[in-house]
Image (cartoon, rainbow, N blue to C red; front, side, top):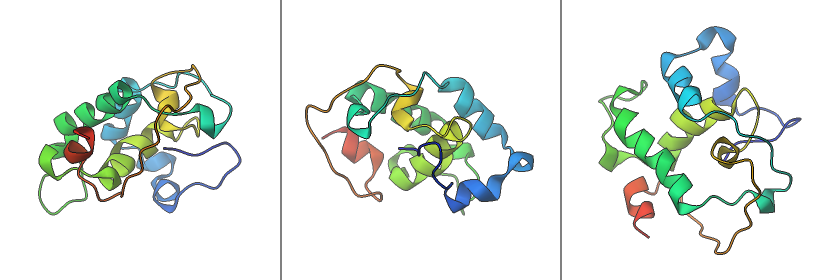
Amino acid sequence: FGWRPGSSLPMTVQAWGPDRELEEHKGVRDTFPFCGYIDGAERRAIRAAQLKRFVDFAAVNCSSWPGHPSPLSASQLNFYHLNEHLILPATLDHRCSGVELVTKTRQDAVVFVSHWWGDKLEDFAHC
């Protein structure tokens, strides 16, 4: 999740700009403050409990997320939603990865799990 200093910003983030600050983004950054950079992508594995923090926050707040024809419910959430409404806004200021919002300690992967961005978060969390 996220990106590193020096890389270009995703188009959705570029479109926000400083004058497009949304109240939801402030809440995300308050809940997930930057903890510190971790060198090496291979050292930025996310633990199940850390991922659950993101999923739980999304489940509670998704019904107020803008840009959807009807309010989102926890059962509809997928990784696209998590990235757009939580990860990108929370990592914008520091251009960090999502895991750097929940720890500053390097975390090597024990198991690698791949996913499709359209996977429902609740299905993925039960794996």
